[in-house]
Image 1 (tube, one colour):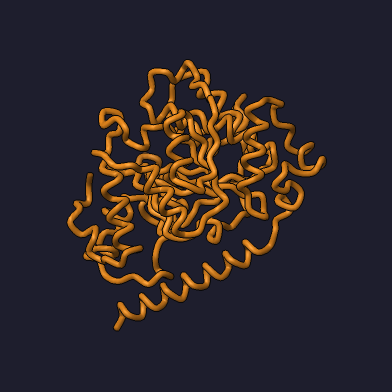
Image 2 (image 1 turned 120 degrees about the horizontal axis):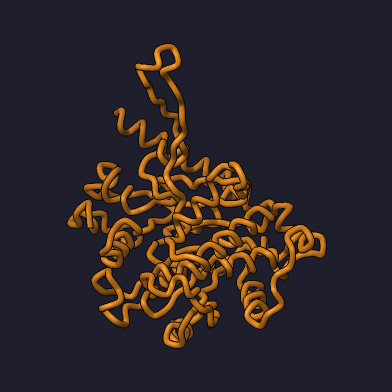
Length: 359
């Protein structure tokens, strides 16, 4: 009985969150009204600065304008042929066309306001052959400092400069990796009240939203205690970024650091987003909202930390499904993507039960 009551309470809460998200989505924000899908009013552009006047940016503006919804919002992904696993030596997830699976699920949920930026001719041909995919072929040179990085990391370093330009054009961008499965339209589940609204690498509510902790040093006597706040890093593999001056500054800083020294973009992004101003260093001051860890979910939550909640599989009502699952914690990405689709989309509850918690 207690389990039934808890399940019903979770369902009611999920319905309330979905209704609130839909109401928010129906109301255009001040940023969207000022910016618009065509790059924005003069006032909006002056507040942000102007994008560089280049052929690449003219192509980007045209593609984003064609893809954007009425609020000037676009889901954006960058990819090359690695994500199609055309060479088994360069795809480390034991085979499978991740790009194809991503596009199939985008089509299934009726997503239209997205853009795939392709970085080679083979990937662009695939998108065109798939049919109905809004894609844009761009030549984006990898910074020399990142030339010896892993392939996926090199691609990740390219997105921050592109994001800066898109924000300066007045668009709100949901930047995503491709190794995730959207089960619902993510734009219906955004709050849109921060500069950055991003998924988390955390695997509990406390680690996701932040939690107060303490230390105790007995030798200090009366002054033995102290408090600190800790939380997990954001994951830029699913992050909604609004066209605000602070968001632009964050993208600019991350792009600049990655152009000068080899580094993991996720670490650089989180340092610039969260480090406090100190000494000669001025923090970006971005306003951050973390997405609900059990709605915009990572694969550690689904397969490991909350495993009892999802395994063994049982029928799940659509209202109880996560918005998406990002397979960032497991190397056998594509296999797990397919099992989640089989479970939630094709109503095969046990589809993932044979897969271990760890990769």
